[in-house]
Length: 167
Image 1 (cartoon, rainbow, N blue to C red):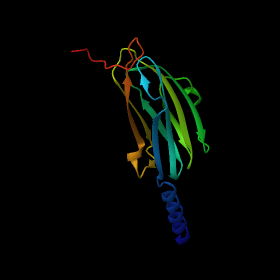
Image 2: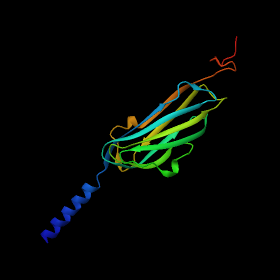
Image 3: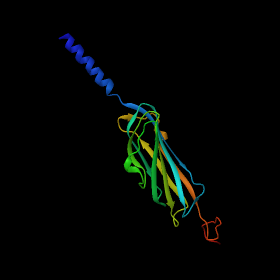
Image 4: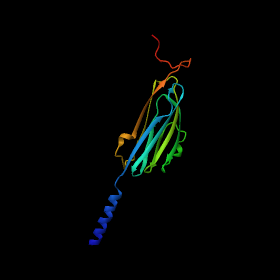
């Protein structure tokens, strides 16, 4: 009987150890490749989500909030370290996918859109990487990448102009 109790306790301790949450420091970065951004022109971003470890991060959600003044988006994706892009994400209007990020891996999205010719003077966009509930992230401050980009206006003469009316 004693052996049965000891064996049961041992197996229960293994289950508790296996049930411990994984820890993964996820980060996301968003940079603009278009300088300057011109009203009516194209703009391009690179969005990179990384798993800095120490554990794998299955079920990570990577998503973007596109600007209201960006239209005709196109998304493509590349990876490193064993991460896999969702095949259904190629050519979509924005990034929103669940993926597995092994330790040391990353996914990079190339996101292109046309800036509205009648829109605002600033593009506000952002990206976020959110771990699955089974993964603890010790530094969630680097999981969000807001981006603010001024939009230049050119008049018909081709010179940069102030969009405000003359006095």
